[in-house]
Length: 252
Length: 247
Ligand SMILES: Nc1ncnc2c1ncn2[C@@H]1O[C@H](COP(=O)(O)OP(=O)(O)O)[C@@H](O)[C@H]1O
Ligand SMILES: [Mg+2]
Image (cartoon, rainbow over all chains, first blue to last red; front, side, top):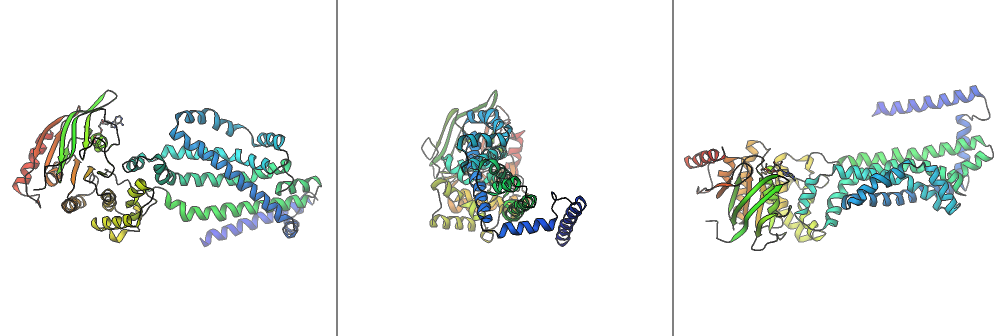
């Protein structure tokens, strides 16, 4: 543990020094040093409206993931109860969602809804839905039919079997989907906000870019990276270590 | 002494075919109240299929099943112990044992939780109520599975080779304990096995099945008084007889 922590510190320092070195050598106004970037980040974080933009981006990420996960989960689960859906998912729904570039969805939603909250939210939803569909699909394939058979000794209700046995078996898969979704969602929301919103971190990035304030672009980028790392390494690996690993079926 | 004469389970002219594979061919027998009936047959002859049909987990294709006098299996009338413990790995021992109530009623009442606790005492797991399946040995997991089957207070317990895969000591220990529980609860047991020694130890009556297409070869009464010792002359003779019938 200590050794690993030390390695993390060393890697961070090396990254920082390398950045600094390259910035100094290039000696260009287009390549801010780490210190200039930190300075700009500090300026961003202490300005009054920055947290509002961070907040609105977070809201869009969470709303988009909520809609995408609900849609993906319903579609994924329906394949178990309705063979038509299994075919539809395999041949149409999943390939479509998977292959159309996010930017195309984003453009379509801008045309439909203009610069509204719903635009980046739907861009996020469409890009994360496939994670849930495919993970639930995989989860259902791995489903232990011994357990569902045992459950059906005690009830005729498919809903109860779904709620008490199938869903809990799928939690690790849903967790994995949520985790990958959030990483993607943050990237998509920034993209969507760059040309599909009048607020949020992506919008601020595009303003900094439009006015050639390169250290602001770096500052927002760093802020973005930090938020992502907190989300993923902080929250999700914690939940994973504490709950999800226990959840996975050992031998039953 | 156990059999009071009431028929709890009646299997009539049951046949089953998987595609072109005939696994059960005109099987008829019944189990009376308080009786232990063993179904002994070679591997692959259709014992699990028979049990699944009786448990209502597979439709009756040819023939009929009557449980407790009715044609449909009332959920309260039967309990099933499978070859594998089939425990939910994310639930504790107690959580697994209250599952039948949650599945039947949505959630377990306080009274039902007490029944679950009592079932765990009966199977000797009162010290492991909060353990997860992966923390238990194979024998203990099967005890949990037994407790889960007992909570609904079934009139007949269907057991599909529940002790296969356990070591000899654990197996014999559990055989004795299940007999003890059976005497306390005064239920019927339909016990599937491929082990003649187990059949002689457990059964009042042994139904010997043939190879596929599976028919009933013989029915052998085991009139040995309980508690049974595995080394008496009668015991060994009955075991030899079953081994011969299986060949
Ligand atoms: N769902 C099924 N579909 C097709 N064949 C099956 C199915 N279940 C069991 N069988 C076949 O039926 C035969 C009897 O199986 P089973 O009842 O499990 O036997 P046993 O429990 O006596 O070992 C086996 O040959 C098995 O391969
Ligand atoms: Mg079997």
